[in-house]
Image (cartoon, rainbow, N blue to C red; front, side, top):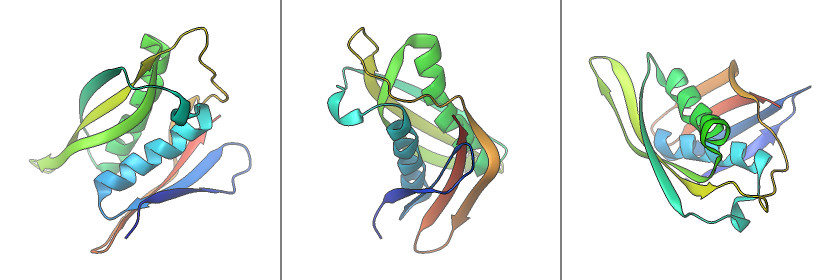
Length: 142
């Protein structure tokens, strides 16, 4: 199965579905969809890397944290994420966790940001897993 994402109709915000052969790849595609709303990753460089670990009560919370970190890095550090990767994902004592890597660059005067995502929401968030694929659905506030 291939990886990818598509945007779905939503009245005010942005809604997208992302998929891949694994949950890790579906999370990464969701990040790619969200990044495409904010800047053109094809014209930005990857000069820095930030790693982060998350633990959640479920995969929905992990997905939210994974995507919200992109917004945090922009707001708190002026860091533009070009690629978000799930390096490793697992479960300890019934609680899922993931280790992630964000590659990108520091924002500068020449950086073009063409959209703003204000927040990732639980609204209409869905995660579907079966033997062949993982699909996630996310709505973000614009």
